[in-house]
Length: 403
Image (tube, rainbow, N blue to C red; front, side, top):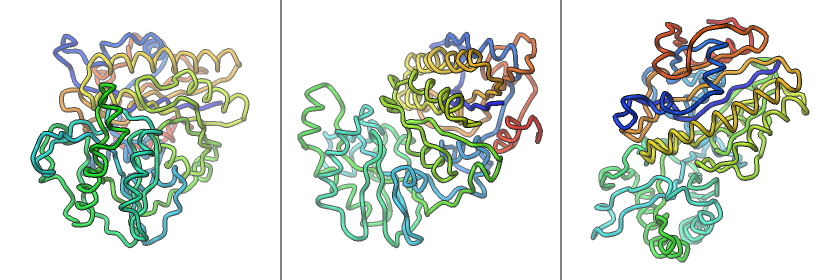
């Protein structure tokens, strides 16, 4: 038996007026998911423990079977594992987004945050910008590391874990009251704007009609994580397919194989087919038992506030990942159990994460059911099934027991 999780990050949403009061998942054309729902089980799952902030860090730990209350030590330390940073006990890791701030105001504090991803800037461009920041601001206490696209890392030696604002939570807001209390972090953010505002990379981006990545924004502070291995927990060889450093870092911490896919960038036009093929290959050619396929695009489109693009991201996930994975496993003669779900909602209306239950779909190729379900929030809630502790889903997937 092979086991698969296919996770559409931020895919869940609220009924939207522009979609005739349907959610993007209801409005999207998803024949592959709907057929699997008619042959399997749907329900709701609570992935964010009560009292914890809703985010892809806590939610994906939960889906992978690690109770965030026990294992979560911050988002950035997980990303540090992916980048290959060997954190010391005294290190604090912080996410370093390269973001877009408005430029017409008189002072830095009066500026507004326009885009947490600077139009999903390429890794190559972001690396050039970070090199300019590093040349002036890096020292023995503060070290910058390049990640993927807009997502980068700051390591603070003998730092302090503190509450910092997530940029995608405050789009359009004036930043003065959102900046860190720590004077050095505030200074580096302000100075990064001065370094980057008229950088050649940003001049080219403006000429191309793209938003400049004109400021480093720090958030997600945490200390070195300590995850037990996926094999020790479940006696299954596991692999991760994702473009996002956070998910790769979780996999590294869990001693899972990290599969690199060329062209996978976390955006709407990521390499969906490459991800699907990588998942199939790791199961059928490399002998792995379990694969976790993470697709970031629905979440990014939710943050952008684009109904049309979020629907399109869900449709791409359906026809370019889920359908070919199922088809390839059936053609290979493999029996498999597959779970499809979001990690958390990212409602278009508010453009950030929330902690409500999300719909899951469980399909077992060896024990097909027959019902009339389609896969979406409304019908999953109507099923009456609910997994109250998200970290128990993995045990359920692998054994059919534990709920």
